[in-house]
Amino acid sequence: MPLAVITGSSRGFGRALAHALAAEGWDLVVDARNAADLINAFPRTSTDAGRRIAAIPGDVTNPLHRAVLTNTVGDRALDLLVNNASHLGPSPQPELAEYPLDELRRAYETNVVAPLALAQQLLPALHRSTRATIVNVTSDASVEPYACWGGYGSSKAALDQLTAVLAAEQRDGHKDLRVYAFDPGDMRTDMHQAAFPGEDITDRPEPATVVPALLHLLDQRPPSGRVRSAELLTIGASA
Image (cartoon, rainbow, N blue to C red; front, side, top):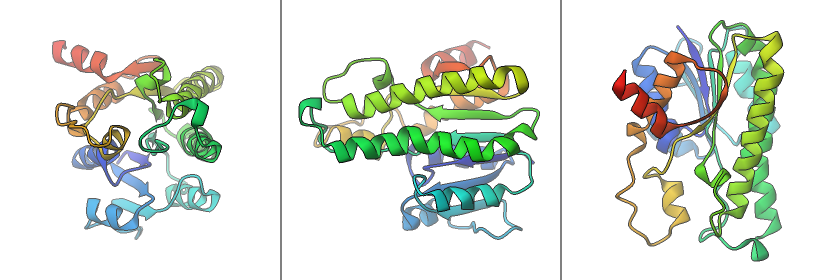
């Protein structure tokens, strides 16, 4: 069975993706900061070796938690790492002139440092797979200068560049590994609601409707790079 590690899996896109992959027979290692939410998302799972889904509560910014995720993968080949866990920052989001620097550090620690740290630890397992993929979930705020999105957006811009450089560095020695920055677009998630407190976001698509785009990406495996779900869904529909 293929094996995936997905961070931030208790809600939103991470949860929808994990359930879709599990339905296709994948083994999973999933995490989230909130243990109760993670148990609710995966009520029949445990970290026992005999179970297909290992649900491990913890914060990806914690080195000890990342070590637990890595140890859970063990000596197996890892086919997919999805760095989905993110930190939005204050809600409502402030302008950069008033942005709390501690919150900015937290955003970068969660959105940039932790994905790289986890990738570093899991690269040996990824190199054992012939179809290994790293997906770093990004945002259109990384390329568009939206007012009051400077903290989150700049952290995702840094993640985009980190993803591109990691792909370039892996290209020669590990041609089988793909590295993508995946932009899912707007979705009806708790984090998106926090970005627009008090507003009606029911016009945004449910995360489950975006999952087919990533599944198409994993199936087709184009060259590493930055990809948008809207483009992938259009390609998948016409295929």
